[in-house]
Image 1 (cartoon, helix red, strand yellow):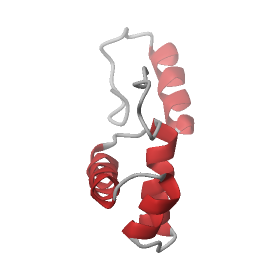
Image 2: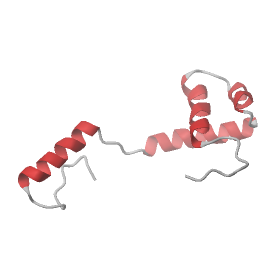
Image 3: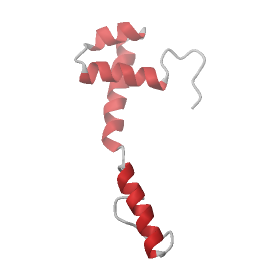
Image 4: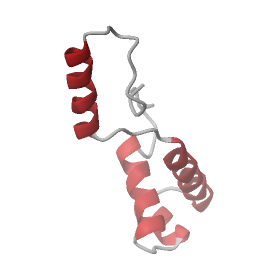
Length: 86
């Protein structure tokens, strides 16, 4: 991912800011001050982080491995789906 040369926060920094506010009970203004961004920017990234967290589709590695094994075992081709893997 390209990061703008003047960007204050990288994707890692935005995640850290959101984690502080959501999980470590920092106030938005304190987290913004620590990240050297405005409070408005901090609220924006926390809001985006919470929206993204609800949309993430994640399959556990063990389940993915199981699906691959099942595909090999049944030899029915790439159209076979186990229900949890896309």
